Image (cartoon, rainbow, N blue to C red; front, top):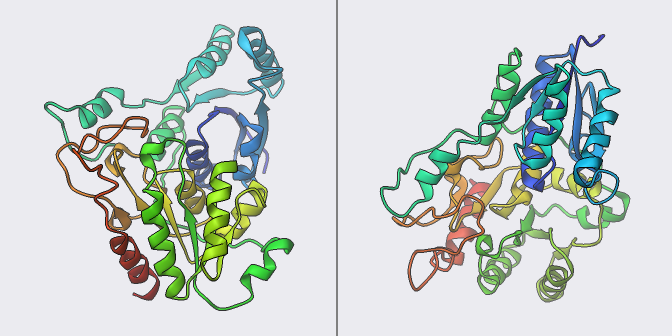
Length: 342
């Protein structure tokens, strides 16, 4: 089908946020086949958008060719060649605003995400906290397209997107054990479940006969995961061993994911895998629960100081013991057993 609309979509980071954009664009593309999408994000995130109809991926290189205002103007010139009809700014940061401004000055239609900053501040403040669920981030993304005149109805359902297991991972899928992915790390330390307690979770799940796959992290996290893999049966470290494309394919073959409030949750959502998620100073009410996931599968404690952070870059204010420390490993194990055996 020929396209009659060309929309440039801007969202550069973070990893989980970009994965959520991909979930929205999958459904947007299905419902609006006459629209072509030019997705602008970091090259590393391109695999999130593979297979989406009528989508072209254009990489931003913020540290090299698109650095600074001159680099952003160069990016603007590159994007103009697509002859877009509208710009959807799903990021609302300095870079996306600069690019949007270049387009606005030359007569293009621009719509920008409403991040709901005031209501998010009300959710996390200490005094006069307004504790209520806020609009989900994916609906905020969809709102931008609605403001551009498109009909978008998000299903908020997991859609299994089974992919072929990478050849070098096939040996990990040779038995019939239930397959559980574990994404125990996060960009901000305050969102990480204490590693000694996570090890107890891994020990219990391994004893139950679940095959475990540990994802996500750099060199130090890789060393921790390798230690766990060497200690507990049928536990595998995948950190540093697979590309993002390969990881997504492996994710799609899992029965369940255990994740922090981090990109692992959103990657699992993208391929239709249910997630048991662990929450500390952040809270699903802020709108960042994985697409299609259930709040019933969120592990968290009730405390009047929660949440006190939107992004997890601030420590917990729950007292001597943090809200993460107050979560019993057995609670997590029991939820996983309930999901897999229920």
